Length: 177
Ligand code: SAM
Image 1 (tube, rainbow, N blue to C red):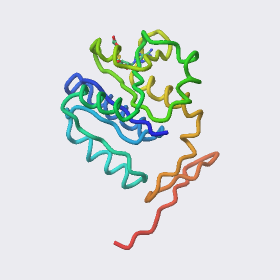
Image 2: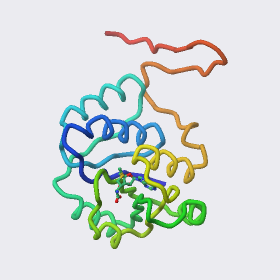
Image 3: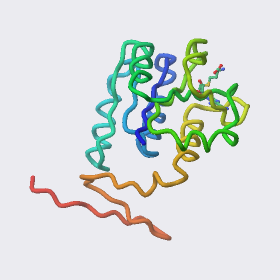
C-alpha cells in the first residue's frame, strides 16, 4: 500500500508548526510523501535533516494547487481519503480502508472547499468533534496499518533508537567523513 498526504491550505505563519507536525506524523507513521502548497520553504530542509539522521526517503513536494494533483492521483488509481469531522465514522469504515491499494489522505487547515468533499472516495471522521489535523492523521494512519507502521525500518539511518525500559539507548552509525 502506498500512502501519500496532501495538506490543503495554511494560515500563514500561525500554522507553520502545525504543518511541520503534520509532516512529521506522515513520515513517522508510514506515508511516502506529503504534498503542500509552498508556504514555508524551510520545511524541505527540516525534513531532509530528519531523513539524513533518522533514515528513509520521505519526501515533501510543493504544489501550486491541490486540484490537478487530486485529478492525476485519481486517474492513477489512488483513492482519495479526506479527513473531516463531518465524515463517516472511522470505526465503521476502517476495514474498507484497509482493503485499498493506494491512497492520498487530504487534511485541511481552515475551511476546506466543498469540491474536496465531492471528489473524495471517503470522507472520514475521527470522531465528530473538532480537534486537529495532526491527531486526525495519526489516528487514521494507525487504524489503517494497525500498528505495523512502527515495524517499518528507515534505511540509511545515522542514528537508531534501541527501545529500552529506562533511559535512552541510541546506536550511531559510523561514517567515513
Ligand atoms: N472547521 C474546520 C472544518 O470545517 O473542517 C475544521 C478545521 S480543523 C482545525 C483542520 C483539519 O483537521 C480539518 O480540515 C480536518 O482535516 C482535521 N480534523 C479536525 N477534526 C477532525 C475530526 N474530528 N475528524 C477528522 N478530521 C478532523
